[in-house]
Image (cartoon, rainbow, N blue to C red; front, top):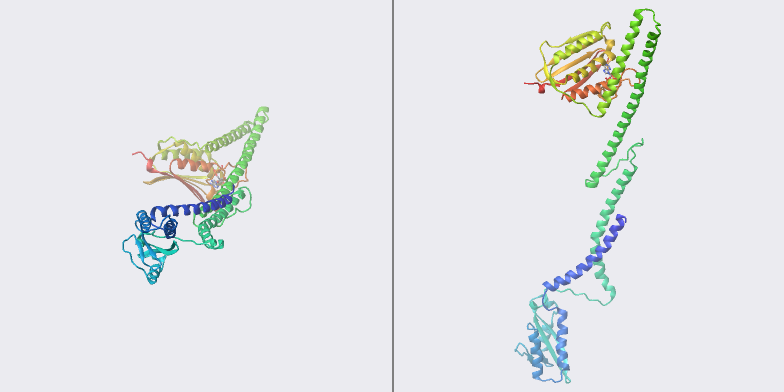
Length: 472
Ligand code: ADP
C-alpha cells in the first residue's frame, strides 16, 4: 500500500475514532464529575408527581401529603408545594404554606432556566386538574443542587444539525489536513530524492543531478548528504578508472620492457654460441650487454614484486640502530662506480660523526637508491648528482639533487602517486612505482619526503626522518 493511501486511511479512521471518543469521554466524565439535577429532568419529575395525584384512586389531604412527602423523601433537595387556582397553599413539604399571587409566581418563574446558573432557586410550575378543579404543583430546588453545567442542543429541523456536525467535522479534520499537507510535502521531497538516487549513474558522463533543498530539517540534511555522496562516488569512480587505465598502461609497458632486453639478450647469446664475434673485446662487450639487460630485468621483476606487495599493503619494517652516515657513504661509493665514465659530477656531503637512528636499513637504502636511480635516469643531462646528509636535534635529512630536465610544476602534486610517470607514453623507463615506494618506506619510519624541481636548474628530493626514535 502506498504511503499516501495509508495516510488517507489513517485520516478517515482517526477522525471517526476521535469523534466517538470525544462523545463517550465527555458523557462519562460529565457523569463522574458533573453531579446534580439536570434542568431537563425537573419537568418530567414534576409531571410524574402531578400524574400520580391526578390519576390516583382517591384525592384528599392525606393522599396529597403522602405523595408529596414520599417525593420529598426521595428528593430531599426539592421543595414541593401544592397550590389551588387562587394561589393558596394546600400542602407545602417545607411547612411554610404561603399564599402566592400571580405576580409572586411570575417573579419565581422569571429567568428560568438561566436561574440555575446563578445562586437563585429554580422553580417549575406544573398545572394539574383533579375532580374538575385546577391546581398547581410548584417544584423549588436550590441552584446548588443542579448540575454545574449543561449543554442543550435543540433540533427543530435536521438542517440545524449541520450547525453542530459541520463545525465538529471541520475542527476534528483540521489537524489531519495539516498533517496531510506536511506529509505530502515530505513525500514529494522523498520521491525527488528517490528519483535522483535511481538516476544516479556513476559511469555516465552527464553531470550528477544536484538536488536543491534549502530547509535545515533531516530531509534537507539527507539531500545535502546525497549531493556530496553523488559527487564523491563520481570522483572516486573517475579515480578508479584512471588508476585502471594506468594499470593497463603499466602492463603494456611491462611486456614491452621485458621483451626488448630479451630480444637483445637472445641476439648476443646467439652470437656467443655460434662464435660469430671478431675478438675477445667484442665477446666481453656482448657479455656486458647481457649482464646489463639481466640486471634491468631483475629490477623490473623487483618492481613488480613491490607492486603486488603494495597491493597487499605488506610493508613490514624491522627497526634496528644504524649509522646513517655509514649507509649514505656506502651507497655513495656504489654510485661512484656506477657513474664511472659517465661524466657526471658526484658531490657527497655527509658529516664525519656518526648519526645513529632506529631504521630498517635495507628499506632506507632502497628508498635512497630509487631516488638516486631516478636522478641518474632522468637527470643525467645535468651532469651533476648531489647526495647530502644533514642532521639537527629534531630530524635527519637525506637530500638528493640533480640538474637535469626536472619535473614540470603541473606534475608535482602527483609525483609520489602509484603508476604516475611524467612522460607516461615513453616505454622502457620505469613503471611509475619507485617514488610511491619511497613515500611508503619513509612514512613507515614516521618521516616525510618532499620534492622541488626547477627544470634544467635543480631537482631536489628530501627525505626527513624524525629523531624521536633515537636510542637514548
Ligand atoms: P619510474 O619507474 O617511472 O621511474 P618513479 O615513481 O620512480 O617511477 O618516478 C615517477 C616519475 O617521476 C618518473 O616517471 C619520472 O618522470 C619522474 N622523475 C622522478 N625523478 C625524477 C628526476 N630526478 N628528474 C626528472 N624526473 C623525475
